[in-house]
Image 1 (cartoon, rainbow, N blue to C red):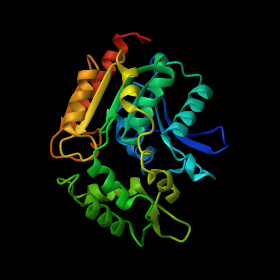
Image 2: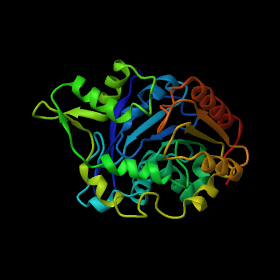
Image 3: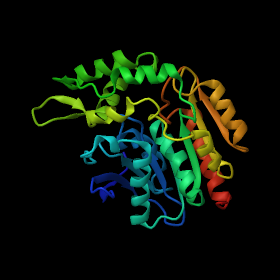
Image 4: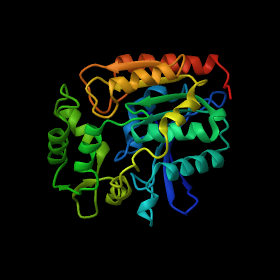
Length: 291
């Protein structure tokens, strides 16, 4: 795996937040990776390993996840607050141009960032998320988010992850499930394997209408002049095929890649997705940012 530095920044409400910083050239915009609802910076380890050196890659832990602090107010676990947190990091780093890779919730945050300062976005990848979230996906997510489990060994945790995700990744073997468990879970002080996020992130998520914030189709408009890649799992219950097609219609020049046999979400390590990421980054190099 590529080397990185663990670094931190502070939110407006004084939550200490964490990111991994993979070194890369200063003459290219950095790639900022934002993970999904219950996920963390580790989700992008393989993506960063492939791109680091050619690009600076910053993978963040949203508040309440991974090595970031937990919020005192659980109602701050909403997309608009995450946007403020990301903007605070960009300001601290002095970043005036960047590429955003957003998976699921991270994609919602990315679309909202386009609404606040789209002139800074040099390119965007939206991984299995769009302005409309399928009802089936929301219902499934509500069945597990915020529900704590503990396991005595990593193999127990891996089998639990397999039980909940076998339809999403039907081709996975036990080694894949173990690797996924180590991205999702951590070892606590009592020696138990536990989920690596604040269970209270579920509180605002359970309020109807809070999952995607404001009018996301309007937010998507902010990406019209920005090189954009939309990735969708063919069996996704979060990003529907019709929504993905409408996104491409609304974004001239955007590319849609559908990963066969995968649900929510693709890992971004699939060969067809890696090739599409390279095409996206090629456009970033070739095209100036247009406001």
